[in-house]
Amino acid sequence: MIKKMFIAILLAIILIYPTPISPQTSLHEKIVLKGLDGRPLNIDSKVPYSPKRTCGGCHDYDRISRGYHFQQGRTNGTGKIVISDSFDQKYHWNLSSGMYGKQ
Image (cartoon, rainbow, N blue to C red; front, side, top):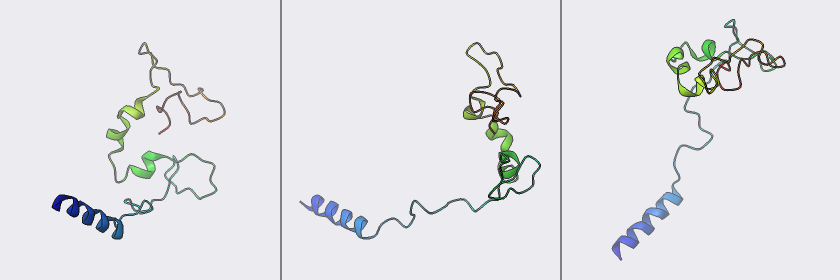
């Protein structure tokens, strides 16, 4: 009985006093997206942003880019490298079918 009462009170407190962090709260400060040349991009820019130039000043870009998701699409099932500068004529920044080349 006491356990059920405790759980009921705890649930009531949780419902009355929700967590102070809402889904809209950002845990990262605002950043300026930068292009391949390192210059800031404006909101209307059609130029792809560069994670290396945008994030590399604060984060270990080389370590992150060696991660699994960044390497997807680098090779086919036999281990042959399949990236190409001419992979996608419409979106020239895509170098492969996976995440590789989309950094």
